[in-house]
Image (cartoon, rainbow, N blue to C red; front, side, top):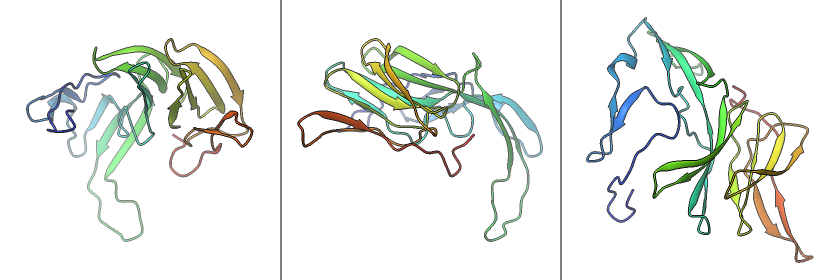
Length: 200
């Protein structure tokens, strides 16, 4: 989007999408796929992406050096059935039965580099689970992210080559940061641990 005017400049899919047909660049709104629209009491199968979307809350990173956006995201589809529910204070109020599963290719997550000018994916790393950690990219062209199966990875920001990885005691949904220590060296840190509603 143009940050001054709000004009939508591009809206290209970077993951498998069949829940909408496209995004109307004039209005900025999605054009719905009527075949995937929920109907009360009916199971709609193979909706992609699943309810968290292809991109959820996890932060992306921008590199002014490579001119790429680094995006950790999920690659999930779902079967979805709506039902009538009554509101009871303090209980879940969803009104849907949702079965989520890996998208095409059998993987549930991906870490990718996107070129916003070319409007295309430059490289991607497929992950077994959704990538719910954030990412950070350095001036040395190294991007960091964590996986739900306990790997903290450093990759070449230009090519996606895995340069280094460390297996922690728990998965990652935290956000990596880099900082300069009192010894003048650059360090990277991330919180390890998975909790809440993120263990899908």
